[in-house]
Length: 502
Ligand code: AMP
Ligand code: MG
Image 1 (cartoon, rainbow, N blue to C red):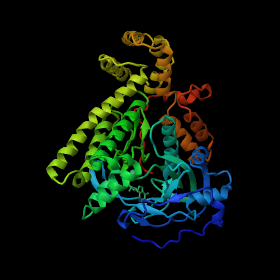
Image 2: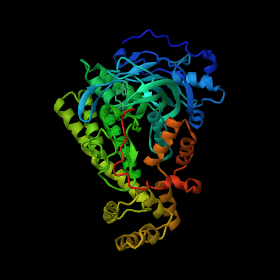
Image 3: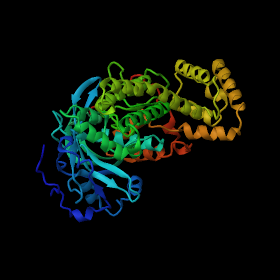
Image 4: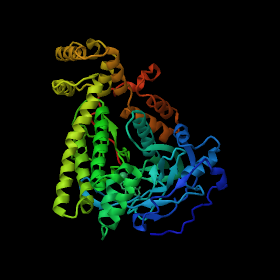
């Protein structure tokens, strides 16, 4: 799977040295055996133009993009000119897509390397939409502008919501059209991740003829993401446990903010516990556990309420790949794996409960809390209450009449909740401030995201996008100038659909 494309491409007439913005690449993944990746450079594009650069993220990585001219930035983030120290590869992986096992791999992504920050943090720097690879199957290897901006907006919003996620450093247009249902402007996203190792990477390794590949990958992941496990009695079992714990915590966070990933295939589940691969994802407006947005999720496999179950299903696939490492006796290995997988439900539930208590300002634990929460969610479902705005209204101590006019059932619940708050030690201020830190005032609402994306993609007007990004950067503040972005859609978006057609 070698390719002789030169690493420095001559398309843009730019000196590579001028692109030294502070990259400090290492290539530990590329040092894994060749079976894990294919070495190749991004395919140059016609006429790259910068759409957006994330200066704040760049600064946190120790990169200075301010010194780059627009032309240099476009050359850099299109992959037309690569940093000297890049060692571009596409990663091999497999995955269960909607329950069906498939061989996949980076069909349109190239990893430049792992950037090391001054404090020794390691981040994958990856281009998405950078042309065909040996794993492209029938795909064109490219991406359209709107979906790349969508990933930029939502991943950055998730970061501001304190939810582990990959991040977005830049989007450039390519000056080329990509053919989807109609021709769309092409673009490349630069994604920053703790790594791009997925459950699907383990599935791929487990599919190799000997157990060497899976052991190498597991050892690599322990070293990179779970180094304290080196000293564990059974490091591979501890790895399984810790991955389960991080996923339980992650999915609980999604549920608590009303996020639907939309395509929780095993290739889209990151081993380090970050949200990854923003395709048809979206946030719920009115509370309905059965909400599905993705047009390709016909049977609602990845609907809102099913996400914990699907995470557990994916983790079971992960556990299967580790069986040869868990114990020499297959029977014992299976028993250990099953026990670990069963622990997911309890771990998830306790994370979710912890988060729900925060959302409701509950500083202590009472057995009746579960009933209080269940009653509320049932009522919200029946009323089709706006999930985000409701919890924010509670957090800023709105009068119950302002939250749900003339609604006796809600008033009764509210009185119960108030009396629950009054039973706990500590001032009400502490409870309300915890609530305000847990209940965002603003989330990337579908209709606002769509408006911003169509202005950018169809009219070349970036101002709505930039305004939306500014608003989403401080989700726990009530900023009056952004009030319009907090409104639910005029008519409930029952039929709102997101498309994978990226
Ligand atoms: P995703 O739905 O983005 O998780 O992608 C699933 C798989 O399809 C991954 O292996 C991608 O690399 C691949 N893929 C998605 N879009 C394209 C494309 N336009 N060209 C080639 N491969 C693609
Ligand atoms: Mg994917």
